[in-house]
Structures are given as structure tokens and as C-alpha cells.
Amino acid sequence: MKLLLSHGRALSLVRSFAKTKVLVLGDLMLDEYLFGQVSRISPEAPVPVVEVEREKLMLGGAANVAWNIAALGGTAVPLGVIGRDRAAGVLSAEFRAKGIATGGLVPVTGRHTTIKTRIVAHHQQVVRVDREHRQDLPAAAERRVIAALRRLVPRADALLIEDYNKGLLTGKVIAAALDIARTRGVPVTVDPKLRNFLSYRGVTLFKPNVYETERALGVAIADDRDMDRAGAALLDRLEAAAVLITAGERGMYLFPRGRKRTHIPTVAREVYDVSGAGDTVIAVITLALARGASFEEAAVLATHAAGIEVSKFGVAAVSPRELLEALRVR
Image (cartoon, rainbow, N blue to C red; front, side, top):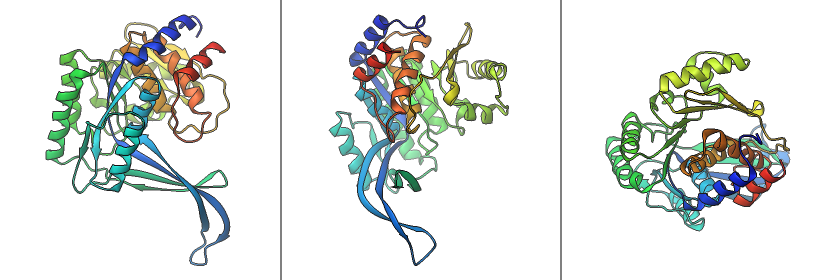
């Protein structure tokens, strides 16, 4: 990786993040953690009783991607739907506390703000409770999101689409986002899910993981030869400028159009929690590409950032200082 990105180039790119505005279109969430201890079994049912000692609220989903961008020095503008509920107020307050704009939040009556509650006892997750809607947006809300895209895309240096299959990214919203970005010459990166997997034609960079790629293409990826066929198939079907397939401990596989595949191994580091690593990767790549980085340079920065993120508990952000330090000691 030393040949792909020098420390001087990394320093220049990371410092330039502060000049970059990224519009994050995606499913906004709150991650709620309840921490406690288990000392008995419930008399009502054979389940542990968790005595909650503390709780923590964190930005999740596309909201966490926006936070990653802001923590790295960029300007994040999240665009997504929220409910008219208490959680929406908490989400907005979390954004404001972190210096993240709230002008792209679209309230929708009758729709929950997505909350994922994780109950953790003795450092282990006992259960997760999800409060959410996964149905597609109603037509009126869809129109409001598209109007917001028309207003916000021209002001951005990049558009990042973060799909969690929660109903925001309908066919009409995706088509409008890609058309507006293409017309304005704004680069587009996509972190997909299966429902809309092959809807993102012509994007700058498409970042699925191995599991999603296998399911979408109906193949098994057992070795590098399988990976190369999958990468070529995605490039062909999506007409993307580049595809980046993340493969956990196997690293990342970058397929730039018209050039050879590059394998980028993971950075050796103690893994504590892989939650949010994908959010960190897409945030760093988008910032770097917006500042003129090559696909290879952006991917190297991203794999180092992911190495930092997985050493922390839960979804977490990476600072410019942490990223540069990781690159310095590699």
C-alpha cells in the first residue's frame, strides 16, 4: 500500500477534507445502547433480567455516515426522513451538537424515526429491538425528498447514497438523485442493500460487501478468481466508474473501469466491534474522491480508517489525527 499512497499525499488529502461538503442521502437512525448487569432470571418467563445502569444514544445508519464525515473535518448534510416523534427531536439535537446541518431532514407524519435499541449485559449484546418503517415513502413525502435533492445537490462536492432498505430510496428518489448529480457533475458513491442493488447505474463508486454481491449476482465468491468475475459483472451491469467489494478480514477488492483489480488488505489491528466499519469506509472514500484522490488512494485511506473504527465499541467516528497517525506507523 506504500506504493499507492505516500504519507505526504495522505496528509494533503486529509487536510483538504475541511473544504469538502458531502450530501448524505440515506436512511437516518438512532442507535440506543442500554448497559446493565444480569443477576437473575425473570419469574415471568425464562429470560434474563437486565438491570440497566446507564444508557447511550448514538447516530446510526446514514446519520452515522454523516457524523463520520463531520468528524473527519468535512461538512455533512444529511438528507432523509424522520417521524414527528420524540426520537426525531433527539436525532436533530445530536446533529446540532456535532455541528451537522438539519436542513435536509424531512418529517413524515405517521412514520417512526428509526431506532435500534441494543441491550448489553456483561459486555455482550443480549437482544436488539428495532422500531422502524420499511415501507416505501408515500408519494407526497417522495416529492419532498426530490425537491430537497434539487435544492441541495448543486451545493455539494459529492453525493453519498447510504441504503439500509428502510423505504427512503424508492425508484423515483434514486432516479432523481442520479439524474440531478449527473447534470451537475457531482460524483456519486453508493453503499447499497439488496432491494435496490442494481438500480444505481452510472455512479462513480459502488461499494457492496461480499454477501450482498453474492446474493445480487446469484454466485458464490470463494477465491480471487470468483471475486474478479463478480467485480467485472458489476462494472458491466452498473456502468460504474469503479466497484469496491469489501470482504471483511480478506480486505477490499477495487475494480476501476479499464484498469486491473487492486486488492487492499486489512490493516492488522485488534478487532473489538465491526459495527459501523462500512460507514467509515464509504465516508472516507467519498471525501477523498471529492478532493481528487484516485480510487486506489481513496481505498487505502478508507482501509486504515476502518482499522481504527473496529477497535472501538459500537459505531464510532475517526478523527483526522487518528487517521494520519495510523498511516504514519503502518
